[in-house]
Length: 577
Image 1 (cartoon, rainbow, N blue to C red):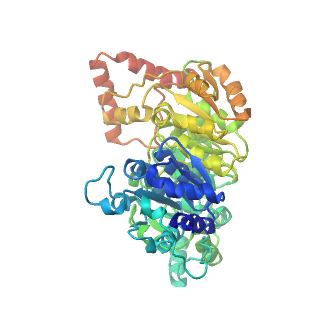
Image 2: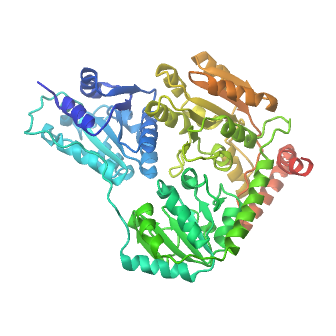
């Protein structure tokens, strides 16, 4: 007779799930054995449950379909939490099955006892404990629908013995659970209000985020009608940057001056599907319209003149026929001209100047040039995100994913595990920081065991580099950020990966090309400049004061050589290049 676990596997199969990420454990035995017996869903073994959750997040983010991760009771499922926060804040559909200690022992302080349904409540759209077998499969189906329809994490907590309970059966087989595609747009009156604001403005700027996915044509048609420059947030880069004559780059801490200028100089800002969090980069004197499919997001970051609930594509389809076409291009032409100058200045920093250590901008530029046309790029949080945002070129087929909302280190390799598992024939490139890679270094073993041909490029600057930049801006002497690294190439080679360490800039292109051409997992350990600065598009008086204090305190601490290195890496290079 079938068990409850068999029913869980069947329900997951009807929801389109074909793989589960996790680490086995005794409280999961009933479930993993059901997977084994079924043979319809693959078990994707990782070395740490945190990596399982990250892998599921990347899988769901790229496919748009439900992804599943599991953890055994207590510490096992507790390890999922960071990856689940990442999935929740990235708004991707992930189901986490968290095994629990025997139900009769809950509340007794039993070995490995935790309360996962409470622990995961903050990082989920649904979190429920199954107390009796009769709750299944209904609770599971509710969880799956919540994850899919709300684009978030759903957690089902199941005591280990319930997996092994004989299923009582129910009449009829439920319909498959799949993603719905409703049309969601504002009312006609709200659209008319938007037309009034946009038509009355002389300098409109568009800011697009992740919500513009699938709406590239509509956003460009809107920019054409409004003669408006398009600024993208980081999560909008992959959807808006390519084939876009209205593109003026990115704004925010990772952006550059042209994106900031286009927003600061506008008299109307149209925010499309973005939760851009940095209020200091939003315009100080402009009317603001925001479009978001989640009404609760409206007005969170800026004072709005109009908030519209709707899918960006559906909303623009309804709005475009109502808008009169503008003919004045002064604002657009000025912003595009500024962008070209800013882009040229950035590109001048991404060259081989034949100096050691290698400039990270050059590394990112070569990655972009050598990667395939449909590559998936995954940067670690920290300085690799800066260089990815500024130098990776999108084309409508490439993807750029990461922990861009949650902002956790160590995401690149475990995200790459999920991406490569979902797309085994596609090139997956992890831009790893040395700090992030070492946090979950054991996942290199997962790449080998699962035969995943992920390509890892390590930005090895022997420091927590972005933390150092934040310290400088706040006026602190760098402290506690040194990393005494081994050769990551030697470590990877010992594990069985193709690996090469690069210290000379002239060797970099050949090393990357060899790694990208290798038919298995590969790692290139690139020694990069520690003191490379990534300057935001505008520097506040507070930041300028902080950097001055950092310089003075560094000299007074007897570490003036750091300032010489900083000047040599940044100032002298710009003067004499």
